[in-house]
Amino acid sequence: MFKELDPILHSELRLGIMSILISIQESDFVYIMEQTKSTGGNLGAQIIKLQKAGYIEVIKSFKANRPCTTCKITSKGIKAFDKYVEALKTYIEK
Image (cartoon, rainbow, N blue to C red):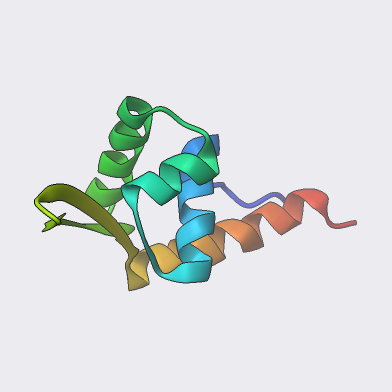
């Protein structure tokens, strides 16, 4: 029987963001944008959705007088990602 897939993580870009953060814990906005090859506007919108779900924490700061946005995966985000991967396995096993 197939398990339900988390609709928050089932978006290609949101899954990409979470995949990056699951391996390195936190990253700045520019790095995520480069790795996912997304636009700043689209990435920002998807980060907000992940933040509202409690899957990531967004930290705003300044580096050399320039704004810097850092995204950090939360324990809830790690659990949701692990659960998503396990659910996805039910679609590809057997």
